[in-house]
Image 1 (cartoon, one colour):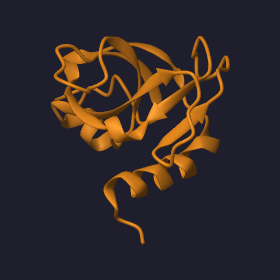
Image 2: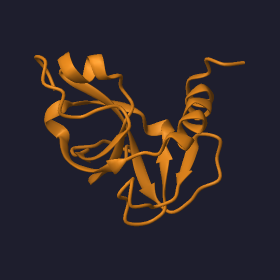
Image 3: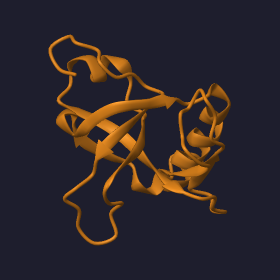
Image 4: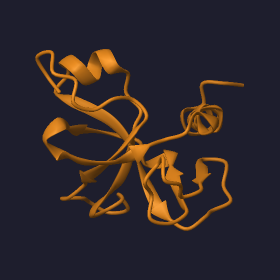
Length: 119
């Protein structure tokens, strides 16, 4: 959070209030992955998050995550990298868990698909 208080970190899975939304944006209060770096998490007013959606999906812009005690998810879900967004830090609520390291390379690949940085 801003002004030096680090209350959430990259890799945290937090409940985030995504309302209000427009059109095809992911809705409701749902678990989201904090992907922004911790310097911005500590001093910025916004946080970059990726929402989790229920189930599994086969697409190059998603990462399927198995529910575990560590990540705190209630069921298997997928990270919808195509729904990456910046949210005001007041939307970030309680912690769900922490994403395991094994998923980060898949997330990087999906980000490259969505944003087209890698060739």
